Length: 109
Image 1: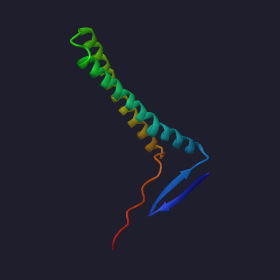
Image 2 (image 1 turned 60 degrees about the vertical axis):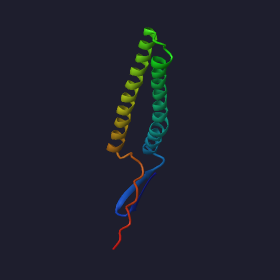
Image 3 (image 1 turned 90 degrees about the vertical axis):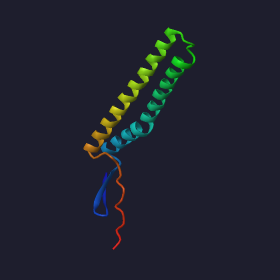
Image 4 (image 1 turned 180 degrees about the horizontal axis):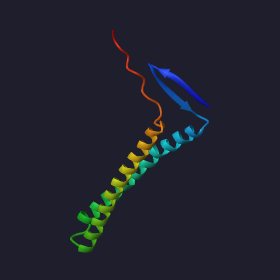
């Protein structure tokens, strides 16, 4: 069921029982649950790598190298997640699945 209504000259379409509703649900899960959780895990790995390489290694070359690898993987995870998050948002905006738009601001005469 597709319902369209107008807010200040711009039309907003809501869909609940179609593939559009499923797409909104998937995008909500990706953008509001999955991505923040993955960013948190990448940040924890990055911080663990910093702590392991510089704080707890006590100058051991092997531990420093392992900590550098964790730091590198944490940074790579950040770059990949930002890229994928951007790609998901570009695709959702291209197909009009970006959700609700803010209403127009009131005008003063």
